Amino acid sequence: MSALLPRPRLEVAPGAVHVPEWLSPEQQRELVRACRGWAAGPVPMRHTRLPRGGVMSVQTVCVGWHWQPYAYTRTAGDVNGRRVAEFPEWLLALGRRALADAYRDRAAAEAYTPDTALINFYDGDARMGMHQDKDEHSGAPVVSLSIGDTCTFRFGNTENRGRPYTDVQLASGDLFVFGGPSRLAYHGVPKVLAGSGDPATGMAGGRLNLTLRVTGLTG
Image 1 (cartoon, rainbow, N blue to C red):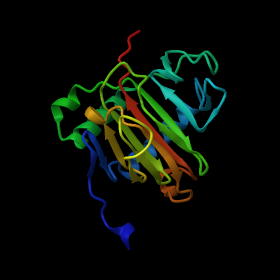
Image 2 (image 1 turned 135 degrees about the horizontal axis):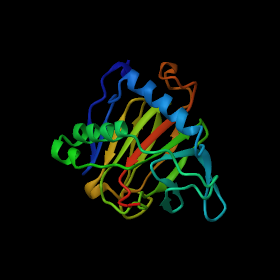
Image 3 (image 1 turned 180 degrees about the horizontal axis):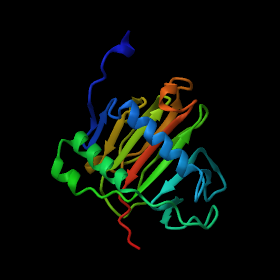
């Protein structure tokens, strides 16, 4: 019965807000369709190789700017050398609406100008270690959208990868925004609940996570 109860909006830490069921079912389906298009190219979805030789278990495709450890470029020199897909205006508008609803601050939302999105796909075995999003040259908030299988999202502190941290269940349609004093908090995904998603989203399995960011770069 507990799954049928509404999940409350929660400020996990100063500047870090979880808004459950923010995306409608139709919006989720539209984002899944868009992500499928981006995953096909011009720079396809791939497992990112880390500088020390490791390979990330999640698969990633980028929009606007291409991310590779630990920098943003317009072209994907580590994949096929092509320029990534443009960041669409409708995604900018979605990011501003997300920020307005999470922070309840319309002025801040109107000034929010995300110019890249990292789209990560998790199968049931994928994980994301604790890390900081610090490759951006901007302190603007990160907007995170979840579709598909539920995951355990671990949101920590700004000093190290250990405790204190809070585990949050991010389900399909959930919004999570972190900025301000929590902008550089360590965070990760230690577990995905395989098979917990609704096929009505258009996903047969796995979890999609879109993170909208402001790179602070030009050109």
